[in-house]
Image (tube, rainbow, N blue to C red):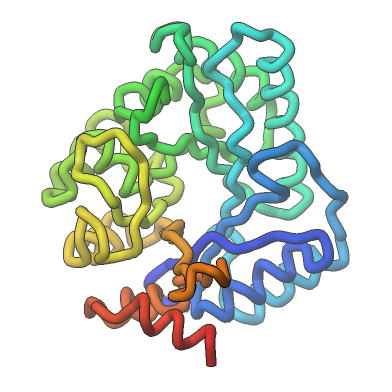
Length: 305
């Protein structure tokens, strides 16, 4: 199997199910992927086609995609940090429980979750709300939740390793909690990725590298410490190509799935409003370890052949 575990966000739709995710992954030359089981902005969820799921697992086995390197992303609408409206808070808890059941049916063991925003309740209260909710969700056996490191936009929690650690320590069934390290987010949160060894050492000291479940690979449109959370294509942001390559190929991350969430490329003619996934070309550039300054143009040419 390819030593570099790299993939991207892919689309999941009712007609093709998990099998469609696998086919899209193979088109990108990837061996890992992440997907939402439905639209991230709403609660509409269709049933899961078991035949398509079986086909997906068969194809992954044939093509050398390890199911351990497949990730589900929980929808954005879940907010475990704010319990001001108890009905909405309980809904978030129950909806997350449903997402974990769906991931079990799909055979996927890791679900990435944004910790949540306290929306004026204060950091301590917000963190306690997350801990309470996760203790309801993570009873018994089941998939692992990977708490995503956040940029600290607005009242987001999870912007420091210490906040993530506080949540992990408060969860009774902590074997079902890991971390998703997002490069854009931690840079925007104030971690200087010009010295990734130092950042990783701090992560290990505060949380522990054994808790690192996956990495979101994104450049950032903003300088570190900006708290803005705007992803950029690899090498076209403030983190820079050389730093991104050092992170992607870091020995400590060798067995950790790395997932691209970089922006789609828009058509030259804005009136057409078409956008194209950059992942095939970005993965090729990453594998070559050589920056392609013409990446955007090449992507447009590829999809307009």
